[in-house]
Length: 495
Image 1 (cartoon, rainbow, N blue to C red):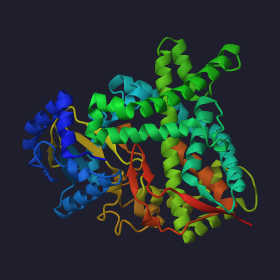
Image 2 (image 1 turned 90 degrees about the vertical axis):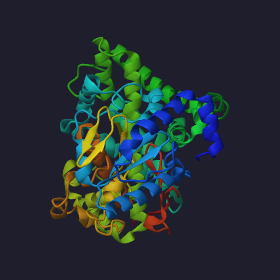
Image 3 (image 1 turned 60 degrees about the horizontal axis):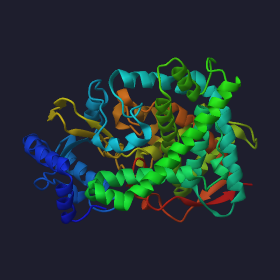
Image 4 (image 1 turned 90 degrees about the horizontal axis):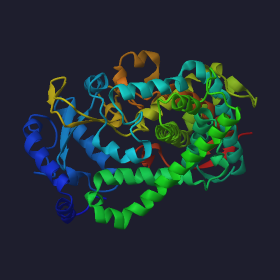
């Protein structure tokens, strides 16, 4: 991934603003960094070479540095890379400071790559604009709306079992299937649009998301991509093709919904309405442009399917690699549903106690969101540590959730960590798979309902198998965390 030292020289020569940032960052931030725990790295380039390699390398480096910092009694470590100063909270007590801050809410530099896709909307906006956007999304995830989504969740989970039945006894790429399920589900619930990608594996949107997010990760760590002529010569074509496909899907959804609005089939003032109708209502009032609607739909689709798909991918991996836990979850679900083929209800989900603990332990070991970034607008006091203005904080669930001081033997899979009496002993910031605090994920309950519905259907009808062990997988860090081996499981129908 990371180029040779010559690439840094080329990048500096052709990209002078980058050189200014490196020199300025080194000269200004270095006095601060010397006082903070963590690797000091080399002059100018910092620890960038420690991140060289594939997308699994950064997390391995961060884990090593977190272990060193804990051994020295610290709650953070700080590193530099190409002029950037980045601090990592490594326990819930320290993480709390940044999560609860109402002022330090600006996303980090690496999010800029996403702006071409999601614009200046809910993901990247700040201040009043962000508060207005968040309020717009609240109705989608309000508890009163969840009842209406259950029918849709059940519909798409049932379709998934039909696809699995067509491939019973074979190896199935569960990662691909649950991503398509997530896309169908969010488009149906939030956009009033049924895509049917579960039965159309060649749909271009999933491929486009993979390409776009992979380029996002590479762009943030490969300096040669910052050189304009190299970017256009080697990378721009694939990037642009992926972005065009993503935008084409959104245009298709918007046009289809607008036709229903114009024909009177859809009432934008209905009390219960999908998110897209709320967006169009804001457009009709003159509060949003159609371009803003477009960007927010992109953000809603991405946030609503990719994270859920990643989490379900890891859950199926954890089930297949631990047959005894899979059996326990199956027995709980069988006790609830018996031999019935009925839909899942809210009462059913409340009864899925063990299954929920299993899901949370999976998210602890394999958090779906690898990093959430903040760029500090002021000097920031994080407990005993003073972090400089202009530096960044990386909220990394993996580091916090593998803290042996909170989770003894942290790589051991143990759903009982989420028994009520054990949860009560921990800080709420010791488990943050969907971030936490003022900019937490609005869709957590939505996602949990959807995933429980999927598991209730899948485990009633099938068992999942692999010859691998749980920790054979490594986490590849992109916009979401991905398994390096894939999740190709043998699917066997139950009697």
